[in-house]
Length: 244
Length: 289
Image (cartoon, rainbow over all chains, first blue to last red; front, top):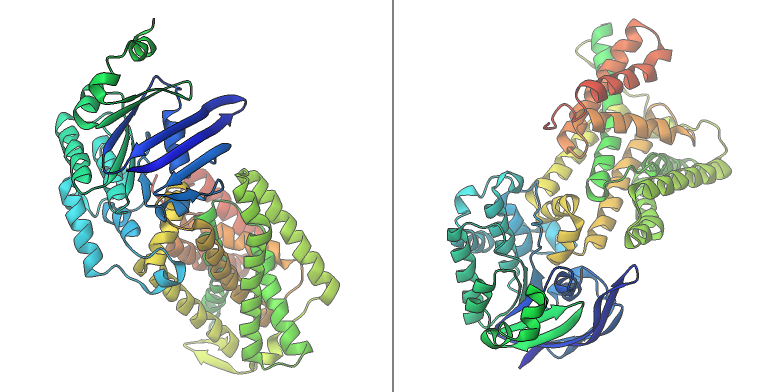
């Protein structure tokens, strides 16, 4: 079953087409990798799917419901979508624990006035932070963590949304081998739990190992799509990556 | 009556008013990151609303105070809804926000002048201001005592909401990064609306107390705001406790300065303190480098 159906989506920035009538279906409960050279539109696609950028044209159907072109970013949680960013974005002046708690707890303003995080939220935060070895650092400000730890915290924050679709933008970049293993374990577990993962990554070895399907983009268009071993050996894909 | 005790009392009252302005200003600045000039005029509008209900319509004084606070909160809400929220949607720069807020300040001042003239108005006879208490060796009026206790109460409540509830964490999240806050499902526009209502209502309390303490005029908003802002900067912008402590400190410095020199130096002393802080400790008393 396809959880995401993109039909002729378009996005341009100052006259440059970042996404050029892109049509794409993404299978549910699997890991889809998006690859392509720099400027091919991978991050723009993630930005549009997560509501960070608006759409110029085309339609997006998520889990059989049509998403409005004017969807606001906070509404992506209604569609069960969450993401991480290429450049880590955390609540820098909040503690590690609060970075997770703020996601886990009530977001309705009036409800939030009277809500203090409960035992349940704390247990959930502990469970999530222990996976990435950050529970010990829970009272430190996010800004004081190392690069790798910050990346892991951002991934943990995404996990706490309990979304259906996870968009990870270069989750392995700049991580130590141990941390890469942790993130791989997390992504594999998401798949086991029946979640959909969309991954933008340059490390082809990792992509081959993790992804069920690879989408290759070039100049905002779909170049190729299929199983990793098939797609990554295609001549036109190699041409785009290595030059003709 | 001991002069020193009296000066300390006066400083605490002045500090309390500055603290209220700083509290609201810091709250709104924290969530929106722009210098809201309208804040001062909204404070004064709160004072005038109370004046209107109490002195013109003859409504009970306590009810008038409540209505004045509500009016200030409503003005904050409207200014956000009609001006700042559309600007946020357009991703306007902070400079545009600042200029827009200056526009709101001028409009509110003009409307107040049109309705109430630019004469000085006072609310003082309404709140049994004749009652005086003698503490230690100084005199404090009932209005001043209520003002001082209100500041402590409002600050206590605000700290409770900011530090202990998830709304506080949500506001912190927005002040840290509105974009991520939206991305994790926080309706930042709605939270900012609440912040404007709460911050403006607190400013309204300040305006009402100025009305009771010394009286108000339509153009007082700016100087009131600047005192609050000086307190915010000295305390570290965005730091709620720092702002309040600095407000009381500013009150003390001003009043001791006036005692030693003369009344005309009051504002000059405040700005001298501001300049010293900007030069030598721009992050404020409690800010980190």
